[in-house]
Length: 156
Image (cartoon, rainbow, N blue to C red; front, top):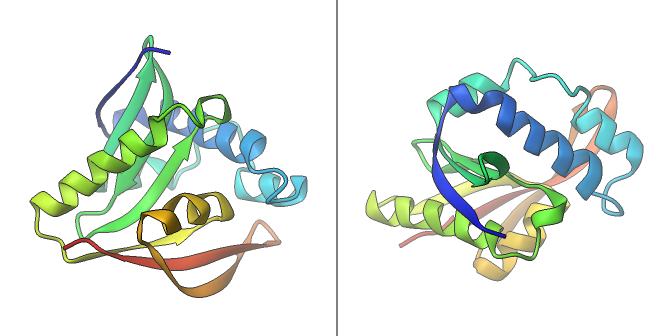
């Protein structure tokens, strides 16, 4: 496992969508049902919402031999927008490395606090790192209710 990190953007939409689709469809059970995972990531094709979010945010991409295996995107205001790692790469230190890029970015910019809307998986990753749950939310995706949490973190 010899991965590297680099800056990303809208040009990486296909690679990031592949990671997203794999992480949601193959890495969320048993926390989300198959129906929920299909509603969350309905298509193997890049969805129209992704390129603008990659373009407008700050993105880090983890690659292994030129193939994307994880990514994290944060808005310029400090909202952790997207954070996905392929299931086969969990537990390798990849997610913490992506997170450290974001953390260093936030500290360097003097961002006082950050927010996110976390899935079950993200919540389990973020809580031990000092993030707190502000409220539980239910969102409707493609006709299916999904549970998530609004979370915040004091950066400095």
